[in-house]
Image (tube, rainbow, N blue to C red; front, side, top):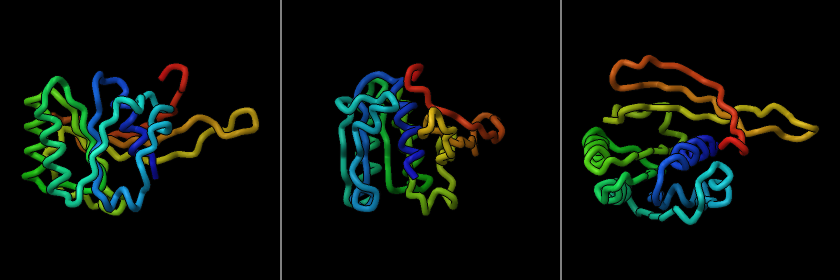
Length: 167
């Protein structure tokens, strides 16, 4: 389900600058390459992407942390692994220090049983059926669920539809 990657692309398209997209080799083998044209459909220009492939989760989190510490509002994606509480706290501190944003896209098998991490929010993005238009498929849709929000936000769900014209 590419819903999480599409939702990440939408969020990242609103931020300036390059995007460091880090993946484990396993994620790259199982899920295929990051498709720049597909991300561009959600507003994230392929020329903004810097792709990193890591052999191990520890190397993935190291690359993410270094990208976040580079500063200037860095945007970083980590795909294919979930950090433990210590690694997630390091990522959170690096994001705060560099005024950046880190998004974690765990393997689908781990998303439901994700361990506690130091993230500000935890979302679940899933594909939803589109509403057919003019005899063809309609706009992409997501079922978004805010599972956790530091500071007291309570869990909520939304059905969101992508509009190419409005981005």
